[in-house]
Image 1: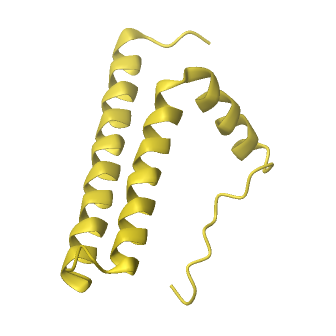
Image 2: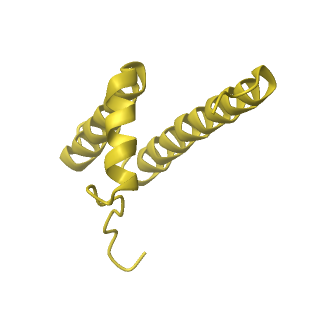
Image 3: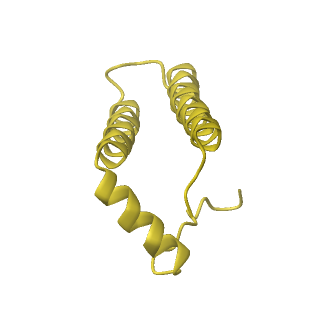
Length: 90
């Protein structure tokens, strides 16, 4: 099925909006972390900051490699990858 130019533009705009939302969410997590553990010398702050940075870097790497995105999408659709993240009682 061939998508029309309008459909592709709409899809692209939605993808860009989702990416912007992800960036804002990651920044929000970092801001909350800075409020909760404000010391750069705190080991937990440093570990959390490193995890946030790694999350963003991996997200960018995944998005920038079209083939990777297709493979991950296919595996998610086929339930080969579990998309749930255990967050305790959340």
